[in-house]
Image 1 (cartoon, helix red, strand yellow):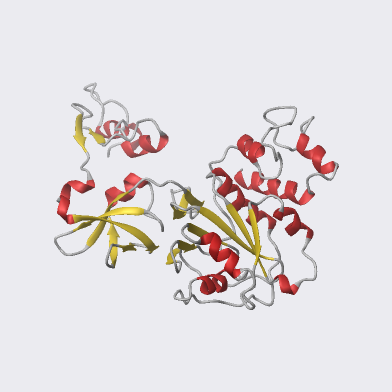
Image 2 (cartoon, rainbow, N blue to C red):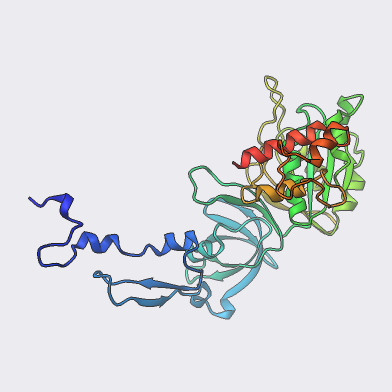
Length: 365
């Protein structure tokens, strides 16, 4: 019987064994993920004996379709294996091509502009996703190789819907969306709901109102603030985000009557909302513009953001944009000469803002 421990060694003739040849083969996909090779549309193929490498050009997804067989569209809803794409006169269901997903690094997202190819079977396929100008992302599943998933693409502004009670204001959640808007140079609108449930706004809500671009208190019952919010959304693509139970879906139903989205009540035992939005979807705003409704997620992906960059641009720390800490790599932990901690000590920055920053910083590790 052959000794498996010696299979990787050279045989008596001086030639390497087959197992040794396999061990030396290049895993091109792994090298691409590691950044060892670039993303040129070629792949390297090796013979069984690890000799005579050949280059093979990867086919462009559009090569299988003639010009009159392709059409551009807008992704309005995404499912696990298909997406709904709005064309000029109709909305169709399209499948994904493996080459398209590989080219993008993930599936198309709501708001993406795509090129569809019509296969001989009559089925539309997404063969190209056009370049995105902006994107809102969140962490991918723990068992996925994708670190981030895109919730919405090509947006003009971010609308954060928060409630002042039932459920109470979540500082960390709001900060993540504000930071995402800041990184993409997008205006951020804070919409306050359920203000009728409190006599005075909580201090953390008042603090947060000072660092966003626009604040609009609304009531889905009385209609207060709806007209002002509608005017701000008109003609733009706005992504709505908010925790479950804050009234985001009810608000969207007031803005887009044809949406008829399902709403839910807040759980009594823990005061948290029930998930009623399960996937992102694009809705037509009457008079022009789009509203993208996203699920009530509890976190937003900032995994690729360097800690030192986060420390330098965190909203509310440096209003004039000038980093004033003594050391340029200050993370506002225990470093000497930290301007942020000094401002917290003097009451210029609330402790809630510092605590929110520290939670985001620690979540990245």
